[in-house]
Length: 296
Image (cartoon, rainbow, N blue to C red; front, side):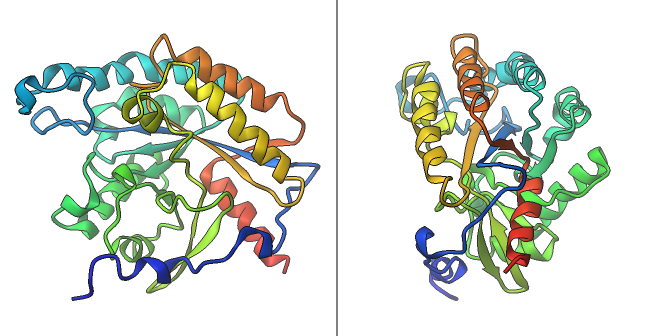
């Protein structure tokens, strides 16, 4: 058996951004805006993926009601703030959704579907791919759940916690997935090699991401605004040479709370106030990127 991680460098060969073919948007477009909303099924019978309150004496207690409820607040309240914020700005998100969440949170998934959001796979439950007993089966179940709910199979995938084994992208490609958000190594889409051909890695953010900002780094409530503005300003400047992607990843239990939501709204308004911002879903970005490749 190959050593864990041995496939990684062969998947995405090193290519500096300034040596690539220039990417352009039609009709005066300058930069892409991609918003990803994450909907997850945190199971009360398991330890929580994240905690806001440390477990007593450092020992996880099950059920972990306060930390489970911290996440559940996002689905009961925070998600609907997202829906209003995006709808009022005529923005469509990519919904990174656990397959099982289509059943656990049907009203939220229905609202996203009715708003025209794209659905992309986010695992069947919120657990690292390394802990899934059968990766291929988990991927198939996720795709089937989304297809049953929306009428269309997802074209994209974001693993829980962005986790991958050496086989994950091969299994995703074989299941029909066309792009992944796990390879957080660029400001532009890049090809990813699999055993059945090539898929695309889209520029998913790890730092303009409220899990990192609010749950890991424990930054002040306005950090997504301050950091997001600086991120956008630089990417907008660099997009004059070749198109960059401004990605924002959000979770309802974090940025959807009362003391943070206005800073997300401020960031969106700031970005949309610039000329040439082109909002896209992941699938729309994939189609644009493929059209650029065909122009070689």
